[in-house]
Image (tube, rainbow, N blue to C red):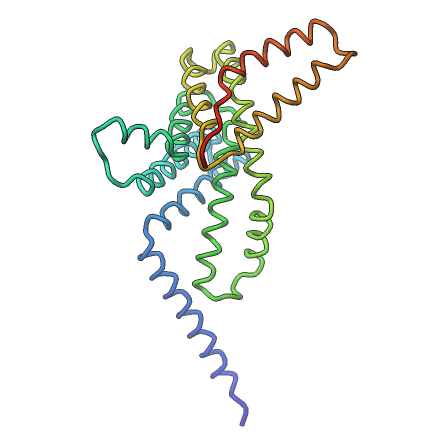
Length: 256
């Protein structure tokens, strides 16, 4: 005898309740990871609010992006370095963490007038990491749940290398941008110097080599450009000066 429609709907509702129960247990068992996911989602939402100011003030949304990014970095830093030690080794370990770099990044630009490019790296990192953990959350609801969201997550993960390369490129381009911001009165005099320290830490990152690789690729491209016979002498001289300046911050090979 065939099952009645009411029994089929009952089974479906039981599966949904079971899935949400598993999701709740997962979140309670992984509170820090769930908190990281939430702050990254807020970063994405606030960025949308800044770019499309429909539900509020875009100026406020800009700084909310940086504050949520700072919260993400602080949580991640606590996760990576949970034990505080009062010695220089602890400080060195702290400064080697990518989350420490981006905590500093967020603090730097909290005191600078809104610049859209500044939000690009934090937005891309938020999208990349939120998508990765969203897949784990969807798995608790069921292997075949929310297939449109799974498709979007797959697209993000497929483009992960390009996303990280774009983040590295933005970090490089923001360095000269901070100098322009000082002359335009939109940033303080210390901003380029503090950002320079952030940029040096990014070049020495042990976990993310994309900024370092992109930096080398740009230097090689400029070097090849300067050696072209058709290149004007003044432009060649400017490129060579730029290459000499950037040579000073080019890091030694970093162990992965």
